[in-house]
Amino acid sequence: VTAESGRQPWIVYGKLLTAQAVSPLKPVPVLVSLVAFIAIYVTLLGVFARYVVRLVREGPGDGPLAEAAPRTLRPEPLPGLSPAS
Amino acid sequence: MHLSDVWMAFVFVALTMYIVLDGWDLGIGVLTLLDRDAARRRDMHALVSWLWDGNESWLVLVALTLWAGMPLVAGIALPALYVPLVLMLFALIARGVALQLIEHHDGWHPVWGRVFGIGSLVAGFCQGATFGGLVAGFNSRGGAFAGGPFTFLHHGYALLTGLTAVALYLVAGCAYVYLKCGGETRRRAAHTGRVAVVALAAGTLASWLLASAAGPLTLHPGETPRLPVWLTGALLLTAGLALALRSFRSDPAAGRSDRAPWLATLAVYGGGLLVAAGLLYPTLVPPGVTVHEAASPHSTLLFMTIAMAVFLPIVVTYESYGYWVFRGKVDATRDGAG
Image (cartoon, rainbow over all chains, first blue to last red; front, side, top):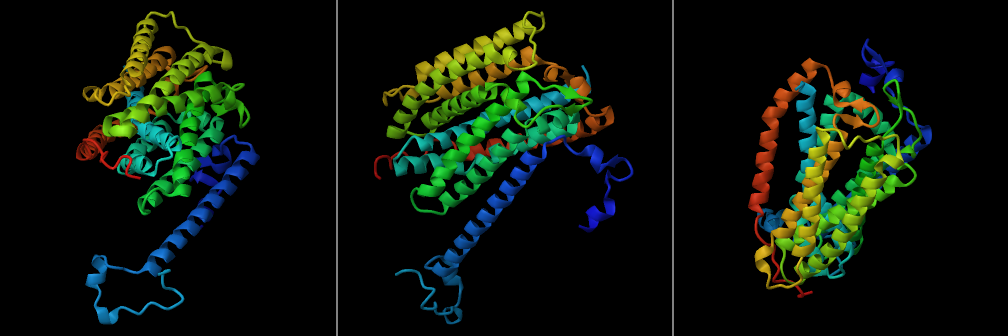
């Protein structure tokens, strides 16, 4: 934000105005694509969060990390969070 | 020979590398939509999963070489092709995420598997539509695109080239599976490959005949330097299609000709690119914008050409190494095991 507000209305400072550089696109496709971009990335953020939560709930299991972590330091899984077993 | 021609050669190399390399993995994506067996889909996914992002890096190079070296083309073509290009980006994003998520799942994930397939299909289609829209030509005014968001369709011509691109990538995907897999996976790829070759031949012929009718493009195929180039390309293309049709064999005993469909696909790519280059060069955005008009100033091109001369061989080397590491067949013994 600092960089942009300091530079505007120039896109290349002192050489080219943003208004001169902008593509001759109609507003509707730009708006639709912007909304679609936001929707896709929000969806992916949700997918990523779900995936991470699931990984954490499953815990290190019998993998190499389970060996690395000292047994005494590993917390007991909470009853509500344990994987369906 | 001007430096802009050298730079155009970089664009051409990057484009060729992209469609040859990403073509097969997009095609395999489409192929997973046509197969219901989880083990075979998983094998096809295994073929793609290690190499697709390296393949797609060439698309970035195409975009950047055009943008940096041919700014006028980027200025006219990107707004004109905004709709198919943005759709292609969405498809590639979804497909990439799906590829990664399938990897972390045992077996074939029904939802992400579908996303991978449909993303591949849409990406291939949009690339074909972009090509058709560009080749048919755009009217520009003062270095800017003058038209609407759907001008690129050219009364449906871009849809035809989109479908042709899907057929092309499907042929490439089948040829790659034919090369890298065995058993039932290979047999099915041979069958689908033959159908796709016929569709590709029809689509190519129609795209060629209708190109001048679709937009402001005018071709002069009879000019002396053009004629031998595009005729050679057309012969190579035809020979490639014929060889592909013959060499996709369902007979599992014909193991020796595993490479033949893939070599045929390369001939199809090479022939098609020669036809396009021979008919269009030096025009980049028909009807009027040429390579020389569109190029950046000489000093910019010189600076970037030196950088490209260093980095292009490096990229080619490490990508070749990746293919070499994963040479040979994928595990086909799991075929039919469920």
